[in-house]
Length: 427
Image 1 (tube, rainbow, N blue to C red):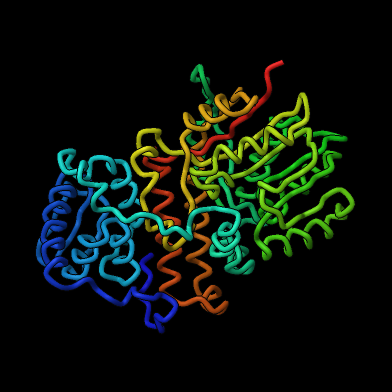
Image 2: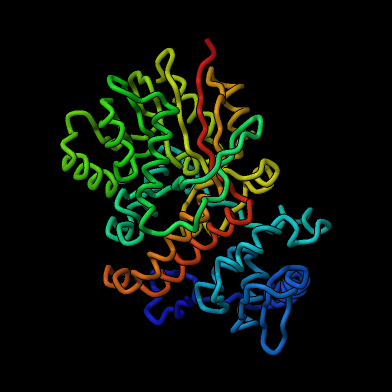
């Protein structure tokens, strides 16, 4: 499905209506065009630019306004690429397929000889995106406080905003396990069960049962806390999203579990107490690389002797993490301010060097996130009219569709992964 370019006011999108211009923009646009055409001519895609066609054949993208597209790409690189989609300068009927091909070759789209200049060109994250205690709540609110109604439109009834775990084989790779491609193409009707399976596996890994004192870092909308409490645990779950807390409190009360679960507006750094199990689902991505050590030191500090930790984390290759950790991205600008993905290697290194925690279990399940995102995007597109009725505009529809398919491309290509990581302390 192609979403029409925005026709409404763009006051909520400051600067997006300004196309780069001037001598510098003209030069960078010419360079960007040469690099773009050379790159797509090596890929299994079809890109139509005016009366020219590039690529080896595959998912089709059409550049409707070449001058704008290359001006944005030249001046703002991948941010400009995404912004050109938001304005309708280019489009694709198979956006996820097109972006998957690009993601599979992302490290080689620009010739290696020019990548040495990368540090001189790419934008740096603004200081207010750094996830200090002063900034983190605003960064979280930018995304998670958009509207509970919005998230309810495309998530399953568990309101799980993280990768599901569908039925599949699990292969032992020696140092970790891999959940292979789901047996069947998952359908929306099975998403809630797959989300429940993901959560129950994490609780199993953390050893959650009757009498367990559980800390959850990042509440979501309360599903994991509810399931832990149903096992007989006492749960403290923390969040910085006022919208998430309000709905999580409602859902916990409706489940008659308020005496076992407390939802606190609290920064993870301020947590006190002692817990037998610490669980966290796709929250480390919002910590920021500068604070990963603090995050794990906090978990180590509050974990009781003999306790266990289970974390679900989106990860990226270690070399790409090192190369991009000071880069300001489209995702940072429009979706997750201050967000950054770790590698499994850096998580293992930090916990070994700065805590008593040891990584003792890992399940890789990236193929399952690609399917989760596909289902979310289908539901979001189907709810477009209702999203507009919530007060969002058509440009927001394009942005969210691009975000979901951009993310899906990362997992479908194997560039991104998601892992359930288990930590214990040596005896």
